[in-house]
Amino acid sequence: MQGWRQMTSLNTTNASAHASAKSKLFAQHPEAATLTNPLLTHLRLIDKLSQSLRLLQKAFPLTHLQPIGLGQAWWHYGAHLSLGSLQAHAGISPPARGTLDSKHDLILLLCYGGTQVIENGSDSWTCRKDSCLLLPAASFVCTTSLSSGLGMRIEPERLLHTAMAMGGWRELPHHRQRMLERVHSWPMISAAEPPTLMWALREVMELVNKLAQLGQPLLDRLQLDDQVYRLVALMLLPELLEAAPLERLQHRERQGRDSFDELIDYIRANLSQPLNLTELEQRSHYSRRALQYAFRERLGCTASQWIRLQRLDLAQQRLQNPLPEDSVASIAILCGYRSMSLFSVDFQQRFHVKPSQLLREARSAMPMEAATAALKESEEATKT
Picture (spheres, rainbow, N blue to C red):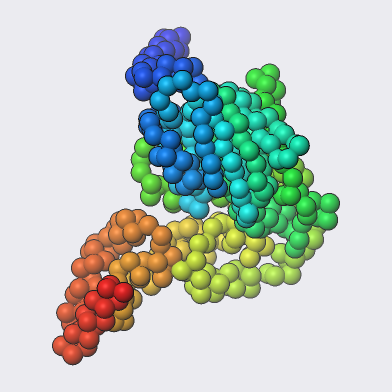
């Protein structure tokens, strides 16, 4: 009982601290304090319409933005976050109207407060608090009240590959092949109902809020973008929750142990490319659990750990034997790193030297003529 009282007291204290921080953040616009957002602690005030547009364009194909009936200066609380390949935007803003024009990607919208009305010609859809919309690649006009939301672009090709990997399909079922050409809507969550997939998606966003405080490299390593793609695939295709079909099991049996060896060859040949567990699952026809078990059983580590080690070993080889045009950045990209800071941290943890130091040492050991030529070519490349 005493422990429960302490926990209740702690929760009350945390809630009070949260309310105080929220009140301070929205001191200039108290109406915004009536709303919540999963990335609330990361929101920052933007008081110029042009800056809001540029920030939103990092995540959305937004071509136009204008306030509606705003009798005072423009304001907008926004935050941009990268989840692997996913670019997410969270924000609280006054009534506004914008134009979305996506020719390639889908747009996922999660509403946390207010109302967002999406229009395409004579058709319209409403996204209210605790509901979700997935928009196809098309043009839409979005009109919002005072609202809070989070959204991101979804690559349709990756979403389809994720769905096929999870279902063990060579192609999508015929009746599902055009599912990405229309708007999908998931209604509000009732507290009395069991948790839904959309609830799980929102929980991932809450987790992102907490993990973001520990740094971008952690978000990159956890592959939370893969979790988002899997949840969206499950929301679109509930049949994926059913047991794996017989065809998948028979195919896996036919592949036998050779499929793992082929997967290893594929990874080594594609270290410069993004390699997530969904793609490896599809390539090998293993389930995610079976894939991780196979790596631990045969290589003594997880798939992600082994791939990182292979990338770092390749980087060490290239840094020790550089080509004239090589730089730390170009070698990092060649080895599959998109973040220079993450590459530097991983490399130093494994080899206890900075990659730039190793490259300089390798160049200093080269014959004078070769070193001079390499330096000259590097300087010319930098100029161009």
